Amino acid sequence: MIPVLLIVIPLLSGLVSFMLKSSTGAKNWALFSSIITLIVSLIGLNLQKTSAYLQFDASWLPGLGSSFAVGLDGMSKILSFLTALSFPVIFVATYRDEYKNANNFYALMLLSQTGLMGVFLANDALLFYFFWELALIPVYFLCSIWGGEKRIQATFKFFIYTFVGSLLMLVGLIYIYLKTPEHSFSLKAFYGMNQRLSGHDQSWLFWLFFIAFAIKMPIFPFHTWQPDTYEQSPTAVTMVLSGIMVKMGLFGLLRWLGPVVATGTWVWGDTASALCIIGMIYASLIAMQQDDLKRLIAYSSIAHIGLMCLAIFATTQTGLQGVMIQMFNHGINIIGLWIVVDLIERQFHTRKISELGGLAQKAPSLAIMLVVVALANVALPLTNAFVGEFLMFSGVYSSDATKYNVVFTVVAGISIILSAIYTLNMIQKVFFGNTNALTANAKDIKLNEKIILAVIIVAILLIGVFPKPMLEMTKESVDVILAKMNIKL
Image (cartoon, rainbow, N blue to C red; front, side, top):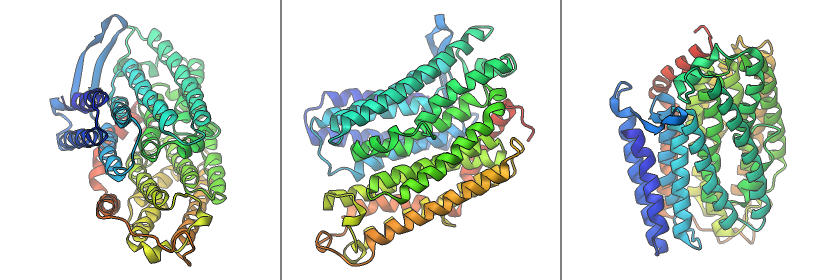
């Protein structure tokens, strides 16, 4: 019942929002709906894994062997909670932003939340694909209608990339479905194909799925849509894209790629890992040259996602647990950074680092909170990202899945050093030094903005100091994935 509520609440709320006339009413309705969804998610987090309330299976398309099967395991709990937590945070953080036809804007945001929830909860391949598309379509309209001056070019590229990726994934899903003895889209049936599909079939199926998921993360060289889309999208949409939607690709690797085409994953794992580390170094070097805050954070995100993808292909228990906890950590950290960028842009009408400076003198609260979030993003000890990155590096280094584990670890470590360089450089140029004509009359953030950033900081420190509950929650999911990939624990 809980999984159904997580999908139905934002779906119905989004449909209702289309009919609202008042801009303020639509805004408050979206915030209220997202808080209800968060409460339901918290209830799900506290239920035992054996609870009947965490699973739901009903007839949907019986003629095609597909059912409306949704459920909450450890990984789904974390990602659905990230989705449920992020939307009210986003709505509060951008509450002062005004949108033309606000009812349509918030309706599409809630429909996107519906799709994201469905992706993370689906236990049926066709249902997974349905929600995958449902999550993407509203974002396309959000970017193309409410985006920046170059939104049409950015959203066209975004559409082409995601459309091609989705089409490739659909071909792979249909092929596996036709090979199942009972012609079923169920997760159990797909997991049973691990031993039935030939090595040749798994090799080409791997690329159909991997390209689709790599585009969504994104992984080099399928990343070129991301910086432009992040830059041109409204900040609230950028938060959804970078904080939550990129996790769809990582989730796809963990839930649908590795366990279903394990042989293909083993065969092409080194190639995929090489793309990950190339992207990490490339994105880090590009980030160091950026003068636009949005583009800097966009390239930073590519580097961090690359490390998570690398740890997945290391196929170790430690590495996979690091990935699962880091998916949540990256989400809240990157949203915190976007909130700071939005606050800066709203006050100074610029995102250029070279035009800012000395903000710490005028806005000390904003400076302190940005420093905490930024240092968490570079995995400072006692912050949440340190836990995830330490586990991922340990997993990559100890991996038996590749003979290049040491090389991958060293190169990935270089990208972390580069991350610290451009992050500290950004902090120094934006917040310290002398004020200029633009920042001389800067004002500190308001109480509601302090509260929402404080919530993120509390989560950062709490997980950094006490990650045990999240590690315990993800252990069973990791064991299942490794067992399906025939890896001895």
